Length: 155
Image (cartoon, rainbow, N blue to C red; front, side):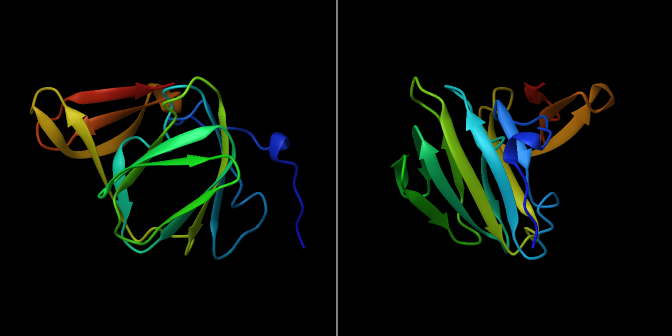
């Protein structure tokens, strides 16, 4: 048995105001677990994405998240859970005025590869992207794989 206090886990630089990776802290072997707090405008991910072999569940504890999906937008509020199968594109964004508190659960632990898409102003469309650490790991950027432009910075 392992037990942790979520607030004791150090956050990491991410697209969310607060992201605490809980997987290793709780010694989970077969599932990925992350705690999130999204300020207005924050997202669970750096863009519209999919995981090749991992299903994801988002448990919304406080607030309201709007998920962009292949079938359109889906609102998920406190007390609700949404699941995405492996290969389904999605991105959850806090489009409201209140903070969102949520848990993200992924199984299996490894994603089997991911594909990330973001709007690229230079290309004029949503394109494949990568996420890179910069400034000696103190920040992350998203970079268009088609033209090489930086499209986002997260500190």
